[in-house]
Length: 177
Image 1: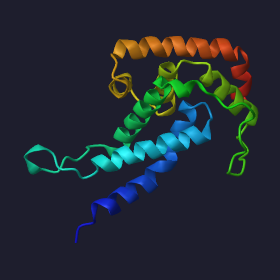
Image 2: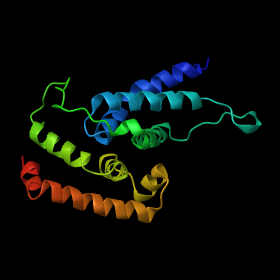
Image 3: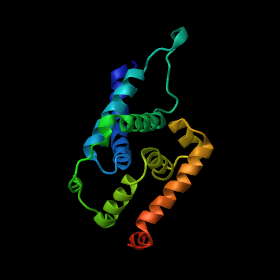
């Protein structure tokens, strides 16, 4: 007996939502509320496509749903950043984490990196997250952002230079911990 479309999607969403949330947190520079909204929007869009029949009546299956979900997440993030209300930024400290701290979990490093990511333009931040957090190739990143490979390389070099400038020589100090 085959599983229903909803059951398949719920299994996918349960397996991927944590990973999508972590990526969304990086894209939003630690804004967990916006990250939750982006993940919700991503999963909503994925459900709308899940199991939909394509032309000629065949099931239009997504070859790699996890990668496609990451692409949808980045596009939802960039779309949100283009809206006028996206310029609003809450002030204050980062909220306490829901999980217990592990020995390698350094709050100073996390805050420094999130602040440095927040200083980047949204597309530069998306390139850094996709290339170095998601470990995607230049070509995969280019497809996700709908830009050329050269644009990804250029944005990557510029974004990393800005991160080095913002973090200074202190990043080696954080990495050694």
